[in-house]
Length: 318
Image 1 (tube, rainbow, N blue to C red):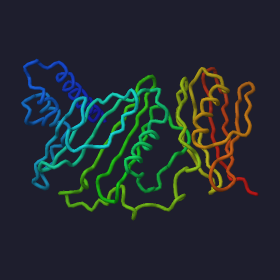
Image 2 (spheres, rainbow, N blue to C red; image 1 turned 45 degrees about the vertical axis):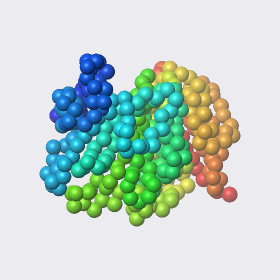
Image 3 (cartoon, rainbow, N blue to C red; image 1 turned 90 degrees about the vertical axis):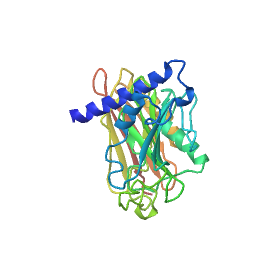
């Protein structure tokens, strides 16, 4: 594990060096070389980054020529890609992998301001406008209650069963911008390796709607001033779904409940009643959609800066 961490650290350091070198390169270096092919630019730092980021086994099984191009603070001019950039976002850069001169994958890195609400939802909304649809359900949790602070959220999008396939991952850290990674497969990753990978957009692998995931609970992220720990969800039969988490915060239980209120309203929940008294705050909700589903949000103060949180959705039988 220490070896893996070391390799990732080297990769990050080298890519950072490439960006810094590009920003402060001698004025006599042609600007057109910035972000060009790592092996052909004559830049030893770019070549090293390319060698580290492109696995050495590429080309051994299919005798193809693989190449990596780096684009600090930019996207490749070709192929053009759909990459929403929220207000205030900073494009850190991108990389393009090619096989025999044709694009195979593209990766881009964005910093999105920490004040941006529901970053994953924003990307989904913008990509939907551009003709992308969410990948068929594989039985993973779709939503699912409290998300621990710093947890990665990833969603995949399709324009059909065949590539391109698009994934967006959002990583949140306290007091830092959202780290957003976009990845596009232009061809099936098994190309040239004799595989039979059907891909994330194949309808044959989808499970029926409601076959998995806590689809009655929206994703709930830590409000400002709250750090969520643990988290997770559970189901009891098909008529009850819940998620529990611990939290570290100096905020009152009432203020924390109000912080989650905005997210629940945005998910279509309607507040029915609420109360905050002493160490406990709670609210009850009516859920949207079919069936008489009711929700309960409960915040309990368990220490000077410790809180326990529960969110529950339950089908009320008539």
